Image (cartoon, rainbow, N blue to C red):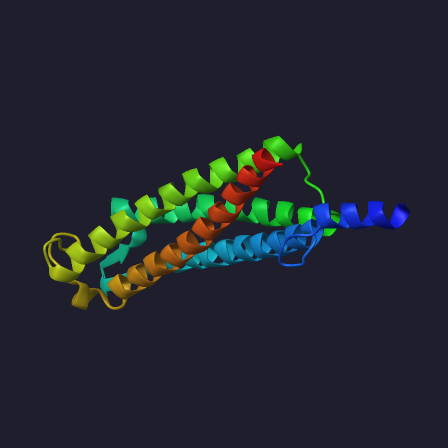
Length: 191
């Protein structure tokens, strides 16, 4: 009788690929931790690269990231994403190590999913604005301080584009995190 009960319990706990739900959840937690850590790393790199983007055009004139509003937007949003992903990384570490959520489960899954979605859209918006500004500067349609092309500003335009590219990579990992948290929301309702 006990053998039949344990076989029934195992069949409920075993996924059709042969992995238990606990193993699948642990793997999902590990992937989410990885995506969150990568989001943090790339957004931090984008902040550092954009924040150090200053070049002297001539002895009296220098150009910096804060001279253009889209670049300020890129830096601010990447800084917000950096802080958010840092907090979420530590929540993911806690979840991975403890096997449970820090907050009540329904609140945690919706909090993660909603914020991942919102911040992913915000990050994509900021990087898109940065790309538009970089294109205008590169094409010469917008001049630095009204008189200088990108070629006269050293690596200023290149460094801005690198920061934007790092922001897009951070967006990619944030979008993957959002996908995983969306699956968690769906799993919570399908139990």
